[in-house]
Length: 253
Image (cartoon, rainbow, N blue to C red):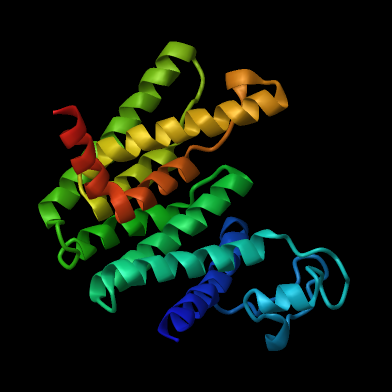
């Protein structure tokens, strides 16, 4: 029953993350304002706000106005439930599990806000940088000075890339939000994770971006946010990064 409980706990947290994803870009309170339908603004009763189950019972529609509820809501709840379970299996009931759970929650919120609005809220990334430094005292295989170097290398590298791209092309190619996000990733995962995250996110971006470009017939001119690729690469590193790096070094040396 423990895995079921952990999954349900993650789904409940995922329900709150949906609130953050919807309200943060609108600068609405995520605490004081009661849950309400985004279409008719009617309050959502507790029995209509049960993660995953309420969406199925209501068939994806608001009880009052019958407008469709975005599929993103159960997707985020289910996804975060699975990620919570995976983190629990990897780290057990420990402090690193709780810290990395908070880090993962921030990445999920950043990902879906960036997909919807192509922005990365400073209200998450900047406090996340300082939180990462604090977490470095409790996460195994990460020291505070590795965290500091990760901030400098992560944020500094993307900042120089953004400047170079603008100088060469005369237009913006990467926003400041991506720079601050990579600095946050460096704070939480250390400087050793930065090369892996940059390489992996770039490869994922080329594959997905190229696929979208082919579907839209826009080629490489498709404008897609880079933040979700950085977040996905960071999650891969959380679960498999050191093992993948050791495998790569063994394979190439």
